[in-house]
Image (cartoon, rainbow, N blue to C red; front, side, top):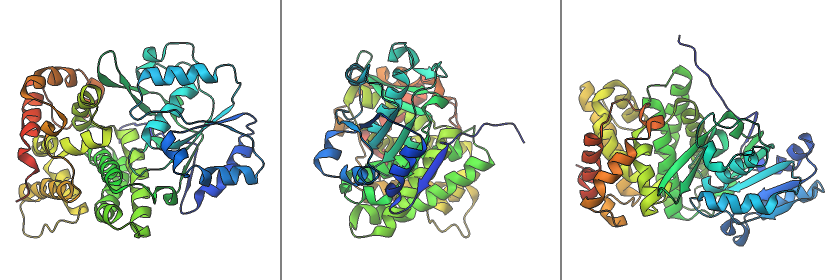
Length: 392
């Protein structure tokens, strides 16, 4: 066996009602000056009260900043960092979707590292550990609560950029499906598909190993069997619980094996056209996988089986093709957009987008099949016309 590293948060607390443990964890960490990082949606919907209640029961004092914006640009982080500078916080609690959790992770290291946040972009650029964080996801999608990644928008370059460092891992991740029950159907669909993309790309990554494979495959099974019900049946508690666990497992798998071309090609869509991260990944999934399929027929056949496809009597190639069918069918059932034109992308944009995506080596190096600018252009053109979204 090759040597590989495997990273997760120091402590995971999972299950229905798990948020009740947050006060105990704050005391265990001996934090005295606590900041809750969240966004307006979480505070205005009252969801934050589910987090505050156990803190108040433990008589824990805290401040709240709810100014994280969706797909946060670096400027948003800088504004938040300036507001909390000198306050002496010794614990950050992030409560929200991936944007909020990534912001909490970034603020943690910004409080202890003197560099401009843009200078930390890349892998292992963070020199000093941040202050401890507790991360509490309110969607089932990004897996940010268990990864060493944080993704932000660079408005100067109009592209998404990532910071990757073990110092971004939280001290505690609390995953409670009850916090996701009120997520609207469209958001549930996009974030759930995002989690599925994480698991699929981790499973087929060139950096995958036996440990990440088992975790990723279970994530694919859970998400594939539960996502439709989570989107369309608001009373289906079991589906929400499955999605919560599936998202967590997908996060652990891609946090160690990495993601590939789906994410790389999605970055220009988020940066220039403001396509939400989960939607961009969901839209591009089928087009990228159709290109990747021949690079690992065995694994894509296993993905098809995990997604519930019947493979009896099929050749390996036919079985692998069923994975593509399953992904396209799920996307269609969930109402995921199938064409880049729906977001204002035109043929004139493709070359610049392809050149931009081709520079994201951190992700493309994980992809099971090599891509040049020419192949990336072709994938974007297919996505522009919506060719691969049709089920047969």
